[in-house]
Length: 73
Image (cartoon, rainbow, N blue to C red; front, side):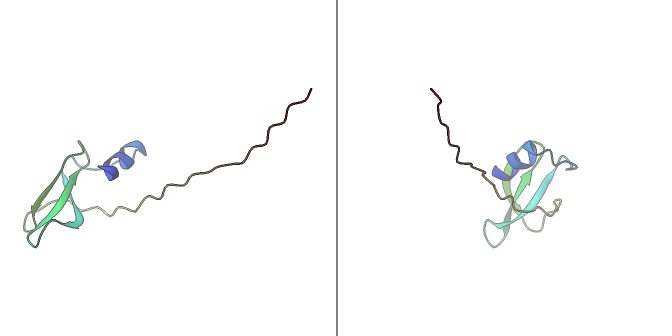
């Protein structure tokens, strides 16, 4: 679900309303797939046909600054 949410919030589009293969296997015969239209995930036999699209890993960057506050009296 993480990948679906990241693509949804960053408005990465152009996906058909269909399932796409992931690179993760469920077992020797099945692999996981993802529907980017509705967020559903399931596993499917590797002999079946699904879409494929290369997706890059997202890295979260957190910026923090040290702020110094002083009061004048």
